[in-house]
Amino acid sequence: MRNWSWVFVVLLYSASIMRIGAVEVGRGQQTERISGSAGDVLEDDPVGRLKVFVYELPSKYNKKILQKDPRCLTHMFAAEIYMHRFLLSSPVRTLNAEEADWFYTPVYTTCDLTPNGLPLPFKSPRMMRSAIQLISSNWPYWNRTEGADHFFIVPHDFGACFHYQEEKAIERGILHLLQRATLVQTFGQRNHVCLKDGSITIPPYAPPQKMQAHLIPPSTPRSIFVYFRGLFYDVGNDPEGGYYARGARAAVWENFKDNPLFDISTEHPTTYYEDMQRAVFCLCPLGWAPWSPRLVEAVVFGCIPVIIADDIVLPFADAIPWEEIGMFIDEKDVPNLDTILTSIPPEVILRKQRLLANPSMKQAMLFPQPAQPGDAFHQILNGLARKLPHNKRVFLKSGNKILNWTAGPVGDLKPW
Ligand SMILES: *[C@@H]1O[C@H](CO)[C@@H](O)[C@H](O)[C@H]1NC(C)=O
Ligand SMILES: *[C@@H]1O[C@H](CO)[C@@H](O)[C@H](O)[C@H]1NC(C)=O
Image 1 (spheres, rainbow, N blue to C red):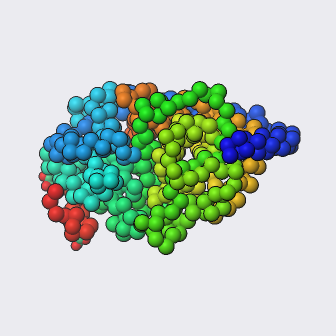
Image 2: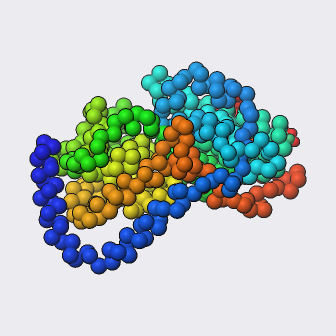
Image 3: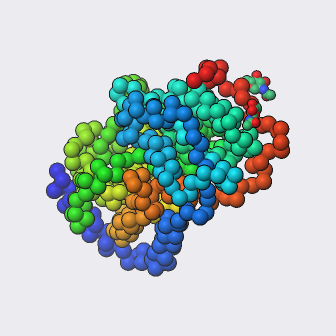
């Protein structure tokens, strides 16, 4: 089947090459704009631009939780753990809280996994509340701003709404005590109660060493046109269909399961990473959340991400030129995916592939150990540095209180 699809691709490409003449105008301009937006910001060095104070908490908020379940180091929300480790030895860390621009509270709220490895954040609100109570009574800095110069890593599906089901997450809203803080989260969707202004959207964690180990020579031809492995339906959680992925994944399957240009299946092969490096387009449809680790995998493996998730807010969107490297398809246009992708001029494909080959693009998607310049850790710091200096309104008049410590569901008020 793969050989056949390559024939199709070649035919399609040669057909579109004949059309290139018509779109030649303005190409030079475009290329310059791209190199501008993909360059400087990603390579910024945060050192010297901000100082971060790391609160020292009892290990029951972090290390002990991890000891109980080491799987937390490899699941897609592991950024909360690696960011803590990174900050402890980062040159931006200061031991003198008086000179800090930002305060960081290391709580591992997503490290509570079911036997199947799914993180369920039922205890997170109580744990987070307990941690904030602790820092606000032991240090003077929380009360000064009620958290407005504090940041928290909350990588769960719906961030600090702390529920795995969207309706419940929306009903809960962002944990009240975090309303003034800056949230660093994977979840990103415009006009959603679980994404507040000023949040920093980060990539999910995908294991860098494992991906590295599966690299194949970059000259390997990309003989797969469209690639996807994953669920189309989630019968267990969405028996009637239509709610999971808002039906977009089901539409991919129903329209293209027999299309030779589409290498799509629910079966996860051992050659998954290699296959992505042999593909031109990798589908990144929403699932329960708008994103999945596929986005990171596609960028790392140079496969053009085809983003199907209306209103998604992508990681580090102020630094990464997502419009230039990826394709955005409206959920309602999934039935036309074949026509849309086959009508992209080859020069546009080549330009996206060239941008994706830029190591700074890949680096920004990864949390390597040890950290490396330009990686996701550094992009988070750059994002925090760009918010400085803090507005004067951040600092409350002495004795002034805005947050309500008893707001929220009563269950959240129970001690942790
Ligand atoms: C901060 O305010 C709370 C009451 O809102 C109080 O209990 C606590 O002692 C204060 N923290 C400090 C360090 O004064
Ligand atoms: C704080 O929230 C609780 C629970 O919603 C509410 O009963 C109380 O009136 C609120 N307090 C203030 C001062 O707004």
